[in-house]
Image (cartoon, rainbow, N blue to C red; front, side, top):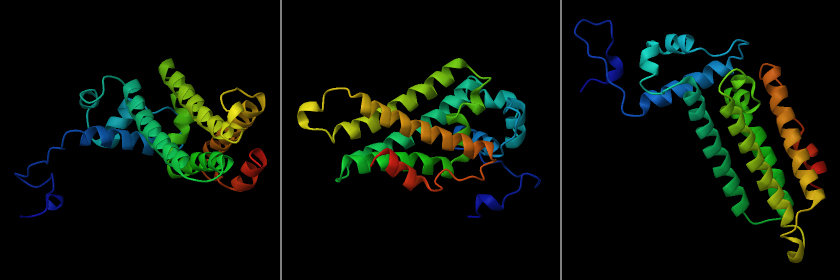
Length: 208
């Protein structure tokens, strides 16, 4: 059987292969991420997205009810990836402070591997979109900070483990401020300034 990739839509009588269920949705999300990575100042429009995919805008809306829902799809990917990695880190043996440092470095590494997603995380890509998207990003960041704070709590004596500590809250807040600052710098420099540059030294200052 001749591979499908050898068929050309321009050939007479050729049949265009229909994407499998879910394939087109994934392709749409990957294309949005790619467009965000290009760092264009203007926002991603459905017209530009449809043109990139050689589809009509109506075809896009057969897979997503709205553009906000497309960004929700990106946030699903971000959440699933980040919290899956956090769960792996938390399950490892070792000092809790080391796990907190690893979570911070993972967040910076995620941005480097997914530049377009960084623009979503800093709010740049969703500034003119549905307000619930920013609320969801805020909730995601709060959950990450809570994970860092929990690692720090484990350093305390068992008797103090269930008590909130201003010092722990300050450390976790400093860590997230550092992460978001590096994400912002990464996006604003056209993804040239790597978030991980000298990051280990800074993280060791936050979590001695």
